[in-house]
Image (cartoon, rainbow, N blue to C red):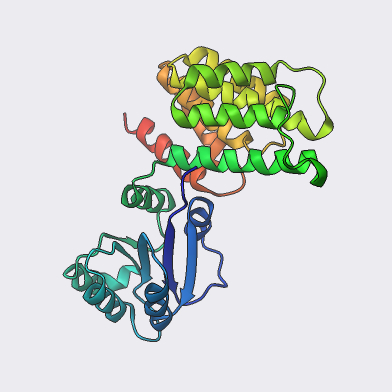
Length: 284
């Protein structure tokens, strides 16, 4: 299992909902503090892979915090967040070796991409880890407190699903395909295991994409869309259909699919990715 990296965020408040912070929380252990003094205190007591500083900190301003951090932690990657009116401050803190900066509103996918580059862990690895952790948790809940340590066999669907995710994480696409194909073809399942049957179809399509089998993958994604309209992977499946169409050269249908994704709730990183795809296709 990949050890989640710690990211420190120093902002003016923790009460406001920020899409980019919510995304960081999904992939990293994010510790958020209010103000510069708290940030410096936290750095003394814990190890962090990166620090994100809001330059508009009201007490002990962001620029001073960056300077203090750089004095004590020469190699710490520092990312700053600023308003468009703060560009002079951004230029000044750049002299202290910041890793990068973002202007509000923060480009969430770019922020995650920067953090994955800093930590050396790909987004695909993080997403697989999340899926594995989720499968393990649901596997334990399905077994019940008296069976937590009971390693069932091939009929234990959560265990099978976890095995498929592990294969994907290791790059064993063929092994993962065998597992997900088996789960997706199962007919009689416990109520608590039916979601694995649906999600296995989605994962099977992902495997086919990795093998450049875009037509087959698109068919599986469409089956998943029809079968699991309430799944949390529903929006991702639509985006993946767009990618398959793009690889197959059907740019008009791909554009329609990306537009559909861009209008789906909730507004998240997929929304931003879909909009970028739309822009790229329109500019061709």
